Length: 124
Image (cartoon, rainbow, N blue to C red):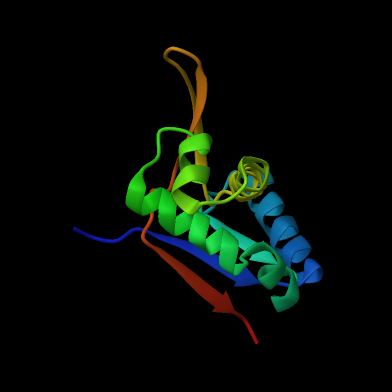
């Protein structure tokens, strides 16, 4: 089985804006634009602020245990539900976690991680 990756990179705001402008111009001309998915941060400190040890632990637990809810995930991690919920929501907003709302006996939000590796790319 091939391990799916999520790409994380460091890219300045200027570089991101320049890339956006080039992409926009290609689209205006009707040219095809290669789609690539990645999460970029402006600097390594911003990356470190998001991918903390606790949040990496959350990602690993979701992948390994496949919890049926965020409450179940908090129990697995032995952490406070509110803190786990905040971490999961941030990771979901950035594309590291997918959330699915389901209704069984009550409403639940099921977190999933569909990749096995985070690849870091730093341009110089």
